[in-house]
Image (tube, rainbow, N blue to C red; front, side, top):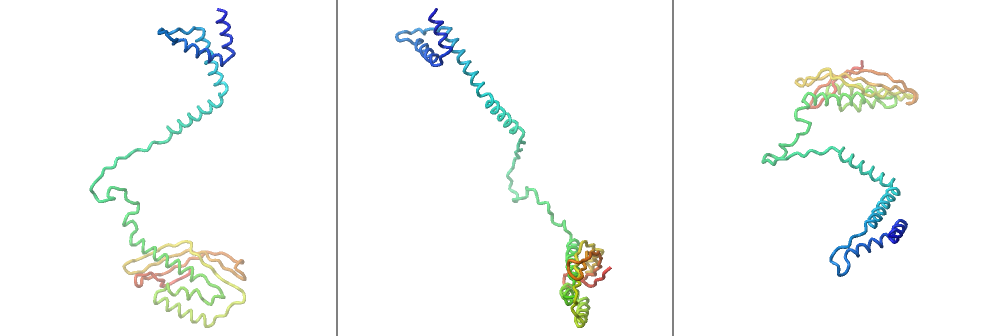
Length: 244
């Protein structure tokens, strides 16, 4: 009995001794020449159990923060996985129809842009280009704005502008002090457009920057211009211009 108590005390303080006794007990269970198993003393089993339990508790106390962090990461991963929406699988049935007939068609459908819309767009582009060229000039440009606008004019209006250009350049003298106007179109309204007769009227709102002395010295004003257009050889051209 004294021997067992002494062994129990040594087990509590010596981890290596626990391993040794545990190994001896296992060997004792299978003694040479003995077919019957030898029972391990209950006090030895209790000491081993208590030691293992103590080591487990020590491990959890030592790595408590690390374990909590790992558990938190695992919980977070589970939440993320379950919060991701699952993609719904759609069955595709092979058919012998023309490729693409079962697919969703593009949002642009033929016929959305009408012929009238195209005509209005073409007329507006010509009107804007002409207005910004025709309405921008200076007293040092020798009426270059009129010359540059000729390609956008109808036959009758071109003849009128060419005559004006010839007369203006005959009496042209560059100003000693700079004066100029720069015109920008800010809005276009198609007042009328007839595809059959090939005639259209557009009203354009413009911003005009008038400079004197230097381009840094300027004033801003807003002015409308009404343009008449005609279609010649399938092209919209300016047939008249009147500042409002």
